[in-house]
Length: 320
Image (cartoon, rainbow, N blue to C red; front, side):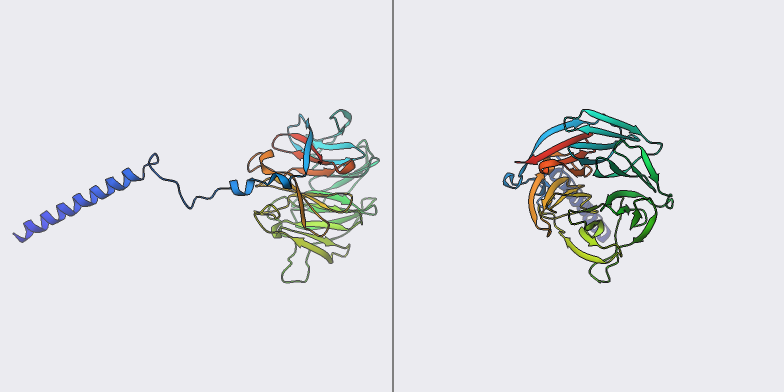
C-alpha cells in the first residue's frame, strides 16, 4: 500500500513539473515576451543635441578607391593616399596630380605644398609636392606599424603602433631618437596601443601631441620624451571618449583647438587647446554604425576634411 502511495505521489509531482515547464515556455516565447527592462540601447548616446552641432557638411567627394588610407590638406589641396597611390585633388574633387608607389602608403603629413612626408608600414619618405621621392629612411623592424607622421620643420615624428613608441627623424632621413611615453607618474602610463590606432600631430606652437589611445588621453612631449602636458576625457557622453583606442585620429585648427574622430561610436568633435569640449562637427548618425573613425585634415577657413573609410568618401565640413 505504501509503495502504491509513493508511486502516485511521484506521478503527480512529474505532471506538475511538466505543466510548469509548458506554462513557462508559453509565456516566454519570443512573440509573447515583454520588453527587457535591462536591455542596453545605444540610442541615448548616438542622439546629439542639434544645438551642439556647429558645423555643416558642404561637399562629398567620391574617392573611387578600394582601400583609402589617409588624407592631408594644404592651401585647399587635398592629398589622398589610396591603393598605393598619392592623389592631389582640389576641393571640388578634380584631380591635379597622381603618383604611384611600390608599397602601400599608410599616413601623410603636408607641411607645405612643396614638401610631403609619407609613412609606409615601417619606413618613411620625404617627397616634393608631386610625390617624387627626395629620400627614404631605412626600414624599421618587421613588428613596426607606422600609423601617423608629423613635422615641426626640423624634426619628423612617426607613431609606431607596433612597437608602441614615437620615432624622430631629421629632415634628411636620419633617425634622431625615440621614446615610449613613460611619464614617471603612476597615473600616466607609457603608450598603450591595443590596436593600430595611434595618432600624433604638431600644433601652431610646434608642440608635439600624441594620442595615448588605451588611456583615452592626449599627451604633449618634448624631443627628450618628457611629458609636457596632457588631458583625457573618458566618458560615453558627447564630451568624452569611450571604448578602446580613442580618439583614433585628430588634427589641429589654426588656433590650436583639437579636432577628434572616434571609432565604434563614430563622431567628429572639437575641443579647445586646453581639452574642453567645444562642439560637434558630425554626429554618429552621419556615419556607418560601428564603423571606422575618419582620418582628419584641416583646410583653409577652418574647413574640416574627413576621410570616411566605410563610405569611401572625402567629406568637407565648415563652421555654420
